[in-house]
Image (cartoon, rainbow over all chains, first blue to last red; front, side):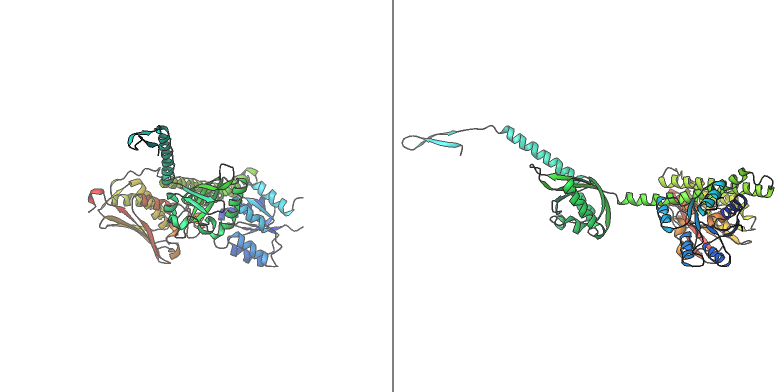
Length: 126
Length: 387
């Protein structure tokens, strides 16, 4: 079976690097990274992804807008999106609940928990 | 009519008879009542709370002086008018009508908050304490409500909540990097990959420092804005402050081979030296972060009529005009990712502004995109030198 490929979108350089390290070295998945919403939307046109791990607070186009654009495009609508976010206030949670994403994971998080939760949310558990 | 004449047979008045009643107690009781009335009246007229009486139809039958001074209405503007329809914003009229009906019917809502409208149309948020009024037979005759104007407190709470939201995000971001990098090391997967191992430690360390700076800046700013930080002002040589700040940041300018130039003045200022050095250091560090290699940063000061004007100029990328004021707010970097890339906390300029304002000075910026920025601030002269 082909190894799943995940797109990691975060404006924080360190976080991109670390989330990729978790997903590749602990999860055993393949990853690509985008540093902005715009870069994410370009990459999904070129590559096929099995899931997107998306930050919410990003300068320029934030995670909400990226998700809406992914949803409005028939080519990308079916890619599961997991929000990985430091936004944890009740008002943020209410908004996430309405979005219909595959899951929300709060920062900070342990590497093993991160990969386990992603596998769980995407139904990739053996 | 309690005195009457007594006359003889001829009808001539011989004496006057009368009855006397001791009314001392009645007079005393009346005086006590008048005094009690005067005290209540005085309380209602002087208390710094709104008091509004409504009859059972919701018409105003009493307002106190504080209500009138807060809203700028006269008594004639208010008495007899329907409270909800005339003095509440349209947006909450329906809700408050329901609340009023429930107060009358069930004595619900002893505490309630809603906006009222002043004569000029300004909205004020009032926290009410409502009491149902009944006559001696137990019939409901209306309500009396005592209200506190909490508009300013509400605004401060909103700002505080917003700040907590941002701080929570700003703290979680470096914490995430630290937890992920150390967590990855703990799994042992990099035990035989020294480059990866070292990289994880490096990231953990950089973000630990970022967290330390952030916590320090948050505390600095809170101490400044709450007035807890004591700024002991003394007579200072402006040139000394400038030199100390430049000496402190000089090492940061070396990698990019930047030139730091000082145009000093012999003027003195009335200032807390450490706080002003911190301000100059913040402004110079910002200039260094945003300067292209081999460019020049100039720090100058000149004495004006009753203050000294300081300037920090760089030849960096510049600041968009619509951001020139906002950058002095908390977490208001021109580009949100600047904090990460440039190592700032997003609070430096807010701290500078707070320090300068507590000196009675002003701080502002001018900029041309692509050419450079200049930050200005003013400090007062020592007291006896003010003309």
